Image (cartoon, rainbow, N blue to C red; front, side, top):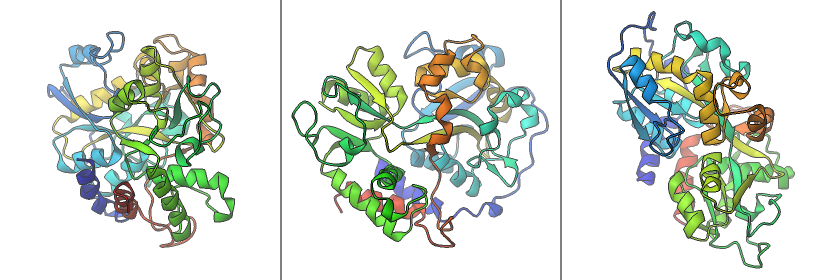
Length: 387
C-alpha cells in the first residue's frame, strides 16, 4: 500500500509552481453547519475518548455544532497527499513536506483568518510560517509541532544514546549485542533528510546546510548511508501502533519515532525513553488545511476555531507529546499541560528543529541544483527494495 501511495504522489512533486494554483473565492462568513466533517489526520490527533476516556476533544464539538466528525488516519505525508488528491475529505492535518505540495496542486484553498476569532492566539512563529503561507496568503491553521525523537529501550541503554549512529551504523550496543535487526527506520522518503542531517554533523566536508536542499553529491552520500542502514533495520515503520507493538514484543530497541509512541509505551509500563542526540533532529509543524472541494466548509471553519481552544491544545500536547500552536495552552491551566511539560516537549527548541519541507530543484544552492522530491520518492523505494 505504501509503495503504491509513493508512486501515486511522485508526480505531484514535480516542482512547486504555486502561481498556477487556481483562484478560489474565499469564504466571507461562517454559516450553519452541514452536519458532517471528514478529517485526514495523523494517528492520535483527533481523539474522542476511544483510546483513553481522558482525551476527548471531538464529542463536545459534535454536540455544540451538530457536525459529526469522521477521521481517516494517514501514516505518512505521501498518503495524506494521495487521499486529498482523491478527494472526499474536508480537512487534513498536513506536515510541511505535504502542505506546499497540496497548495501547488490546487488541492487546498486559501483560508480567511478573519473568520477564526482565536487566530491572534497562535504562536507568532507559526502564524506566517512558509509551509502554509504563500505570497502572503494563508492556506491553513497551525495545529501542533514537535521533533522526531530517538526512542530507545532503557534496559539496553542505561544512559540515553548520544548519537543517531545507533540506527545508522552497525555496532555493538551496551547490552553486548549487535544493533542489526533490532532497529527501525521511517517508511517515508522524507527519511532521506534524517540521513542528510546525520551527515551534516559527521561529514561537514559535504557542505550540507539544509537536509532538504541536497545537490547530487550530497544526495548520493545520504542514499549510501540509507543503503547501509537497510542492513540493520528489522522494519520500516509507518504505523505508530505497529511500532509500539514492535518495541513491546519484537525486540526492537531503537528507532526514530514520535513522542506519541513514546508516551503510550511509557504509560503502559514499557522500558522506553526518548532523546534528541547531538546531531539534532528533524521535525514537523502540522497545519489543518481545507480541501478545495470541501462539501462542509462551515463545519470546517467551526473546527478551525475549535482546534485553537487552549484546553484542546493543552490536552493534545500532553497526549501526543508535542507542542501547542497556542502558547497559552502551556500555562493557563485549562487543560492537562503545564509549562514544565511544554519545556519537556521542546517548546524552547523551535530554532533547533529542521522542520519537514518539500525538496525542490531550485534551492539556496542555485537554480535546478538540488534533487527534487519526486526523486526522493523513487530512490527511497529503491533503497527499501535493496537497490
